Length: 282
Image 1 (tube, one colour):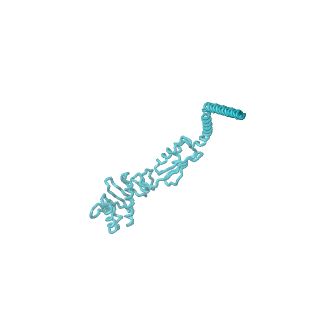
Image 2 (cartoon, rainbow, N blue to C red):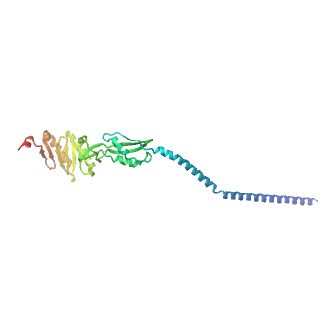
Image 3 (cartoon, one colour):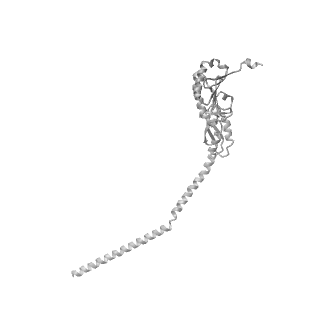
């Protein structure tokens, strides 16, 4: 009797386990079917995300474009004024401003700044320049003017760095010292000019003109009107000899001297100015 009950209980337990296993298989099968359905749905909707992204991007670009046109129109107004600023002594600011204004065709935003700057620095008196848009309708040109320290030949001027520029010469530039030579020798001529003035300052004179000839020979003019021909070699030694001779002998008759040639090894040659009696003779 007991055996029968035990056997019966085992069958009941086996039936319960089978039922549980069947239920588990059904649940797994249902989950698999559900996963497959979701995967299929996702595969079908893959294009939605890039479509929304593209739509949002197009809306953003459209919004920017709608703002761009009125903003550009406000920024690109026609230039109403050209203003030239910076300390100057020789440059005609109004004339430069009018010259630039006459060439402007685009609005303030559309102006080619590099082209305008190139036009400005081509002016002989402009050493450097910057061009600035000043909204709503002004173009500002800030200039750095050339500073002349000497004349170069008959028509040019030199700045403090030994660069030649060619403005329209005025009478006021006559007071500047006159230097001349080949264009590539400007730095050498300026350096020699400085050294010679240091040398002649010892006897109270200044060099007002200095020439470097093609063959390398030097000649100079002093502020008392005497022209000194120095030559190519032993320049400092010859000048020291001239300074000594001038101090001891020539200074007393400086007003009568036209030229002194110091190219000789042991002396100098002096050319005297013609006297009034000589000019009227005959």
